[in-house]
Length: 123
Image (tube, rainbow, N blue to C red; front, side, top):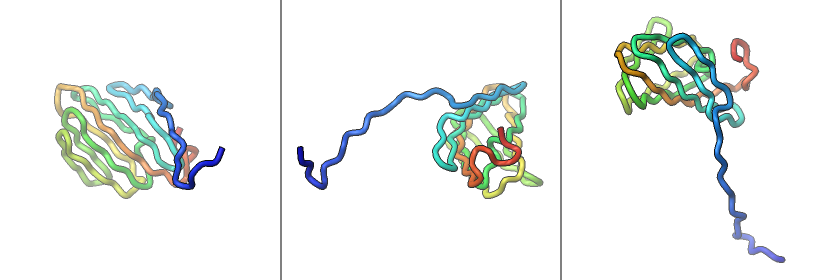
């Protein structure tokens, strides 16, 4: 059977569950997808709680608030985000996510780790 050079093989989708889920007092971090040096992470923080998680400390990262209110603290800097607001960070500096509201916070993050998943300080 000959295929025309522009013919493409159809790709099928696949369902996936969290690759890794880390439960913390007051929250949970789930790595939802990983390819090369990129990870997609879902973070949930209970109302009034704060979370510090090395999975979120990539070489660079982008964080989108889906639900709730977030305060990101990195070094001496602080950003407050509401739903649909995002923050880009270009440092592997430890990051704290604080939920100042009584409702649950959900943040979707894309994290770049050139050292890969075995990078020092990471699970």
